Structures are given as C-alpha cells and as structure tokens.
Length: 571
Image 1 (cartoon, rainbow, N blue to C red):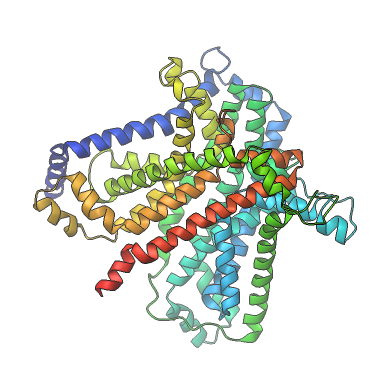
Image 2: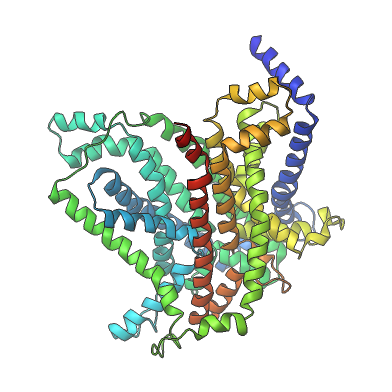
C-alpha cells in the first residue's frame, strides 16, 4: 500500500514539472525515431522487400547465396576465436598487474597498451600487419626473405582483432580482480594449496561470470567489426563486409536489410546474455572492495616468466602501433624504404584534400560530442533519480545501440530516411546531410556515456537534490546547478569519449557519407584498399595525434578543475 502511494506521489510530482515531462517526451521521440525506427524498417524490408506482401522470400533468397551462408560461418568462427584469445590474453595482463609485483616500466607498458585502442582508428593494426608481415612486408620479405606468405584471410583477421580487443578484456578483468577479497585466496594458501591450485579453485571460479562477460563483449565487437575484415580479410567474407558489398556492389537493398537482420539477431542474443545474465552474476560472485591490501607475488619463479611474457606482448602491440607513423615516412612502402621523407604528410593537405577531411571530421565530431555527453547525463539522471513508467524503455533503448553493429545501423538509416519516414518524404532532407552523420555519432556513443553517468549518479545521495527542490528549484535548475556539477568528471569523460569515438568511427558512416563530406577514417580505408599504405599511415598518424591530444587535455582539465580536485581542497 505504502509503495503504491509512493509511486503515485512520484507520478504526481512528475506531471507537475513541465520541464521534466517535455524532456521525457523529447527523449522518447528521439530514441524511437533514430534507434527503434531504423531497426523496425529493416524488419519490414526483410519480410516484404520483394513486393509480394509478407513472406520469407528475401530470407530464402539470401540463405541460398553460398557467399552469405559462408559469411555467417566465417563470422561465428572469427568471433569465437577472437573472444577466447582476447579474454585469455586480457586475463593474463590483468592478473600480472593485480597479483604480481612489476616494475614501473612494465606498468607503464600496460597503461600504454590499454590506451592505444581508445585513441586510434579501429583498423590501424590491419595496416601494420600488412606492412610488417604482408607479401611486401618489412619483416617477412626484406628481413626474412619470405615471398609466398599472406596475412590476408582468417588468421589475419583473428590476430588483428585479438590485438585490438584484448585491452578491453584487460580493463574489465583488472577491476574484477581488484575487487576480490585477498583473504579468500590467503586462506587457501594457509591450508597448503599451491598458487596454481588457488588460482584454479578460488580465483577462477569467482572470475567465471566476468570472463564470460568479457568473452561476449569481445565476441560482439568482433562480429560487428567492419574495417579490419575489409582491409585484411581478402576473400574471407564476414557478415559486416558482405552486407556492405551487397548494398554498394549488388545494389540489393532488400537483401542487405535481411542480412543486417541476421547479424542484428546474433548480436542482440549475445548482448541479452551479457547484459541480463552475466552482469548480474558477476556482481553476486564478488565480495566487494578488498578489505586490505593484497600481498603481491614476489617469487621470481612466478613473477619473472609472467612479467616477461606480458612485456613482450605489450612491446609487440606498441611496435605495431609505432609502425603507422614510421610507415608514413617511407618513400614507397614495399619497394623503397630510404631516405625517410615527410612528403606524405605534406601531400595529405596539398594533394589528397586532407584539410577538408580533417575539418569535416573535426567539426562533425565536435558538434556531436557535447550533444552526446548532455543526452547521456540526462538519460542517466532520469534512470537513477526519477521514477516513471517509461524509465525502463528509455534505459533499454539507449543501451540498445551498443548491440547494434554499425553496418546494420547504416543500412537501417538508408532504408528508413532515404525516402523519408515510412517513404512519405518527411525528414528525407536529413539523408545525405551533415545532420544524419551527427545523429549516427550521437547514437553510437550514447551507451558508453550513459553507463558512465549511471555509475556516477548512483554515488550521489538523493538528499542533496531534495534540499534544492525544497528551496523551490525546478528539475532543470536542480540538474544544471546541483547534479551536473557533481558528475562533472563523468560528463567531461563522456564528452571526450564521444569525440574520440566519433572521429574514429567508420562502420556506420561509410554507408551514409556522401561526396559532399570527406571523413578521415573513410579516406584511410580508401587508401588502404588501394595499397597506398604510406599516405594511409600519414592520415592515421595525424588522427592518432588529434585523439590522443584530446584525451590528454581531458585528463589535465579533470586534474585541475574536476570534482575530485575540489574535494581534495575541501579535505
């Protein structure tokens, strides 16, 4: 009874606040229009795409294509293997950092490795792999004299994606390992168990849900990846590249929509397992923050081999990334490596319209970043601090974009907006414009900012905001003057993350970008496909400098002006 009365009182307060009601209505309209609607159009196209009413003819046609059924098998094989390898390597790195006494140099290598995938385009390692180990590779051909090797295909994709995604697993598992109470493992050690037995019987069982979570996240990222299979896949088809070629090469929009639905079903199934089953079990199997400091492993027979193994792997990853700026200095990759030259950096701006590409990418990302950050904080605020019937809908749909591959979203926007809403011509003007690119950037970055905002808001006592309400402030004023300043660090982090994700995005926008706009990632992909690796490396190097600079500026700003700085001053 009291619970229902409380809910009724919350609804009454909500309806008395027109700003909050308008915000909720606008949010629902935005999420429905730009996330649910394109996906619904894909479903409609898949079942009525051949114009014969509701039928399965489109699905029957695409499943009769040998390349499509092969692409499904290839995608699942790559996804499972990449998920396993990334999780194992990520666990090794996380275990060494949390449990083993390592030096500052190795710790610095770990931090660099965890940062590189964030600030670089998603296909940089494909460029490096081709330049180092391809048929004209610096290592294979010129150092080892091997001429008949090929990094293209299944193993090329697996290696590149594993190196790209294992830092994600490393960051996830590092947090889980830190939260395990060391007394559980020390009790087993006191009873005579060896370190390997403690790991297998105590640590690993506690980590199993987290390992499954890391595996599924990496699996989803792998099967949704477009750029790496496109560059290094060769004739090895995956679902993402097959969808792209079906719509750009075969001009089969209905077939591409049906293929996109198949890929979407796979990712949604994995996302549902990861989100609603494994995340809950992960929280339940850990004992919370460690009650005291963990005694680090100092035994050289354990520490030295593990540290060397991780250091070699980290060094190899860093070498792969360093290959990009170095490759931009060579006169002609694969034929002439001396003398080093900066001509490609100059030609980026004088011959290859680099100024326009960087300007367009920078401006579009700069516009989308604050919109994404603000929307993320508003959604987080509504989910955590307010109670209303559509709250679950807003949270679920905003997080749904995390499970939708970029290629699928791009096809959905083509089918949903090229002829206007429901082919009525309404809103058809945004198709091919800057607006649709900004919307895609916002939608793709929204889940990351929302998760960060929810975590930050759950740490704020509701009495702080209730005091402002009692003094007569409305919801907008409370959010802008009380809540937002308290989560300033999360807002700034979401702002820069949205900017970096937008300026390095490719999978969704490659289907939507028109000749009116030149984007950096599209240019890099185009030159890489042509074999112009030096100019592609020059573009990629400048892009990495921009994104890394943005992250550094954000860290400096938070350090000197963030909430944590002010809290230290108060103490």
